Length: 285
Image (tube, rainbow, N blue to C red; front, side, top):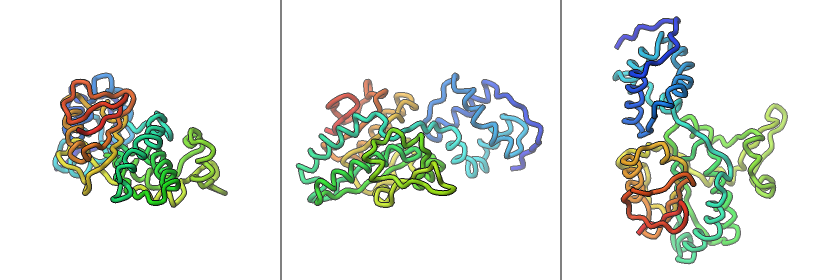
């Protein structure tokens, strides 16, 4: 397919064009872009459109919808559209529950002793959440040397997965980490790396990162999980998509296993084999 390109760039997206693009994005990854996101989408795509030397949003959208575009541009488009807000120790209550309740309960049942405890962070973003979880897994293993676990973490964005695997963060990003964990689990950059911090190798090796689109009917997961963190992700989907994702996740969650959502999320109106045991924490029936 031949696409006419020009360095003269038209700086507006019509409502019709936005609707066409947002429908395409929803079909790809389930993200529901309401009309008030139009300005955000324009802002995130302008640089890419100029780089590709298209002369309008219309030409870029036509390319994205073409056979070539769907093959070559889809992952880049998702990277640009995805919102990747995250922080170390965000919604810290969940990590306290993990340490003081979920891990001891499962370990008491022999999970993590007789066989591996398996845990999945379903939206790793740039790595702050999975590394926070890894801190607590390592702490629990230190207190319980026979504790054995496998930890996987996924995201749809290849861009943030690369950042997560690199595990390098600016000072302002590591500020929420308690001092005791900073001393144990961070390496301070020197010379031209001053102001940067990297997660120590023994924590980095605990996490296996992979790409996963949550609206797929099956996931790239070999083993059934005991705990799934899926926080601050479902807010981007409509209810039918949310229900599909939750039920697909449940196929990969052990009976008696736990699903943790973000504090702004709930499963009200969602049919799934789960019971709520406390705010935003569910157990599989």
